[in-house]
Amino acid sequence: MNKARTGFVLIAGTLLAAASPAVPQAQANLQDESFSYSADILDSSLRSDTLELSGNVRVAQGAMSIEAERATADDFRSENSRWQFEDSVHVRTADAELLSQIASAAFQRNQLVKAEVEGSPAEFEQRRGSPDRLVRGRARNIEYDVTNNLVTLTGDVWFSYGKDEFRGDTVIYDMKDERVRVNPGGDSSGRVKGIIRPRARNGGTNVSPSAQNEDGSSLQRDRDRDVANESGA
Image (cartoon, helix red, strand yellow):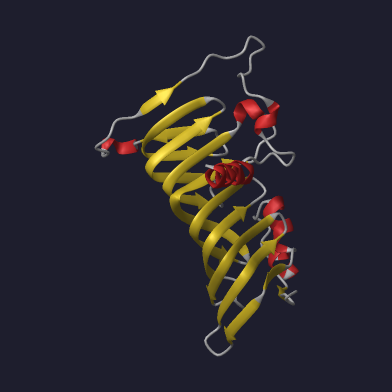
């Protein structure tokens, strides 16, 4: 049986970009994009400005999208909405993607400014073109500060840059400066562990280009492969 999907578009006012000359050009362009969402089922209270979506949920604006099986939103018609997502959550931005069981997202002026995901584990990948600089991480909790390009991973963290690996209780990664801090402040009870693998003679690492999908992403492919392996076990 084919279900008719419910789809809505919230227009992000172009006046916001014009009224904010200090906003970077990439963000200003995003403010001109429509904010849209779709699902199989919608339940909304217009009086309280709340929204419930279920079944193949997708929220999108420009290069940003969030997919899940269920979602709820507060102040969903305002510029500063707050969303919760559950089951098979997949967050994508122009720079990164995350996979998890549950997630929360905060929008300001109709732009995603923060996403927080939880899972067993949750996963992060910085979308980059070069396999030898591929950045990935797994943890129980991952907070993605989109505005400041900071990713904070906590709880049984595994983090990799190319083929080099780090493990700790907390990892803070600056996506812009490519700087990583493990167990900052010295408050962690565990020790930092790492593996630095030899570089290839050509100056790169021994990373096969096939480690990535055509779109530069490997998270979903790896998760699908793991599920297939478990089913065949």
